Image 1 (cartoon, protein in one colour):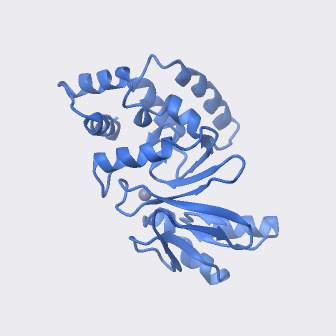
Image 2: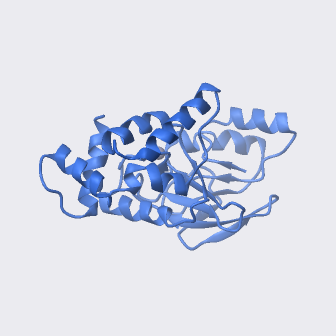
Length: 234
Ligand SMILES: [Zn+2]
């Protein structure tokens, strides 16, 4: 199974190296760097393509909404669907609740210590989507769409310098990247402890956002919007 194949060739190369065939393609949202490889994979393997019902996904055979669940053919993995709009209007996540540990495929909504930009949604929608992901069990493995971890870490330290969990995570993630390895997946527990976009209720983050804005901020969505705008310009 492949999630969000922006490019077909590394997937084909990996399947050949492992001596396996592809069972299914999953897409979380319509951006080209997540669906650009689907046509090339379908040219090689005739497999189902699971994607959001509300977005245009090349070759999609199963349009999905929150509440849908299905078993990936051939690999016996049960997945449930969550609607997580904000980065795009129809963005979905796939959750394997019964796996040990549980697995989350969340595209460009939640990153390690970051979140996606709001291209098609509102701050309120994104806060609701991130809340939904933050409620998953702490040991859930977070497979997100991009390796932005170290850049996000620099921003997280600027927003919440007193968070000691960030220093500890920085040492670990830098060592991982120095060995040429991906920092992903992370876990929901790590994200709750270090991701500023999941920590907008912390007084330190609200204070930093208000200082950055130069004014008092209202509800949680206003705090989130300020932190997101700060990151965009960081
Ligand atoms: Zn995207």
